[in-house]
Length: 167
Image (cartoon, rainbow, N blue to C red; front, top):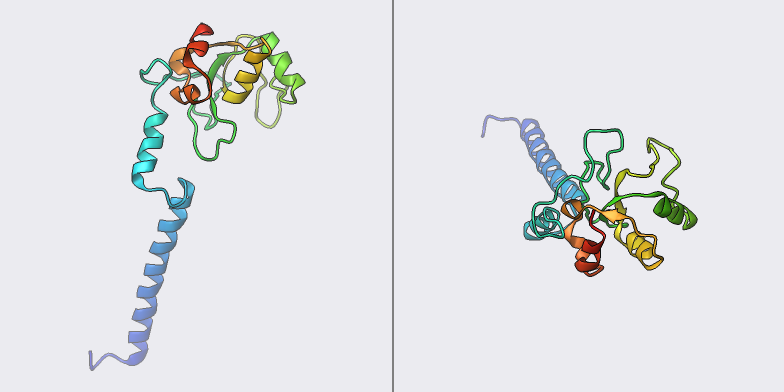
């Protein structure tokens, strides 16, 4: 080390500090994307909650293989997460009665816009649990697909009520 000029040592220290800062930045910025300072245990629990349906079996896709890919994450699944303020966990077979009802509440699901194709009678779509409950209370709830309705829906309404609407 005696033969290495001080400027080279300073450059090496700067490079090492820069690498450490980049590692810290990417570590903390990526943790924010999955829920901030959540522990891995909580992340694992959240993933596990999104793998079962209201029947207690594996959550199946609500839509697949056509232009109207549903789900908050647009992956066909009625799964949810921290950024899903609507809790899109009910796989419904929308009908005209429901579409008219939700439009009257300010959520027009029939008009295509911004990459959204618009829904028609018979389409399968992941609905917000609170909107489904609101439609249920107004006697406008659509049928659901139990195998594709996330078990999290049971935290908001008795799953036996949901099962009465199973197609």
